[in-house]
Image 1 (cartoon, rainbow, N blue to C red):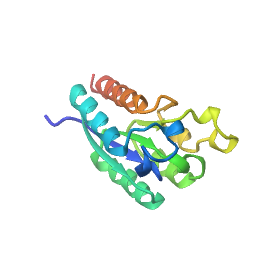
Image 2: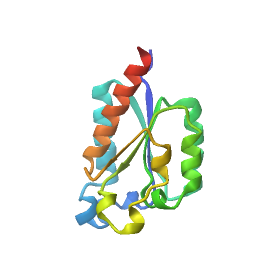
Image 3: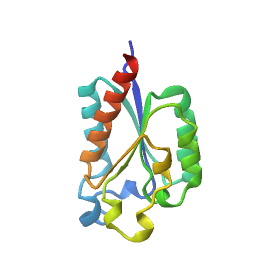
Length: 150
């Protein structure tokens, strides 16, 4: 039996992790984050497909493809959280659990960052815990998938 697949999507500018505003986003790189997710997934008995794009349309295409391939989805929509109804609509069309993750606590930031359209389509939201938020999202999705199998 194949391990359930969790798609991990990262939005714009997350390719700059480690160099972009380290006081806000930390010093770890996107490669470091992928390694953390892969190690966590292996320990949970799930597999991941880890991706990043600076393009809204590409993220939407990947979300639509997840309808046929993924058991769950983790998304850090980054700046698109606050602007993209199209991402929200694509996520709402999924029939799988979705966890929204933010490295920083969006509720402690500028007012325009405190609202996320994506949250309307998410099963849960984790913010402000840095890279640990991704680990917790993987654990939560693994638990949700186990419950669904019972």
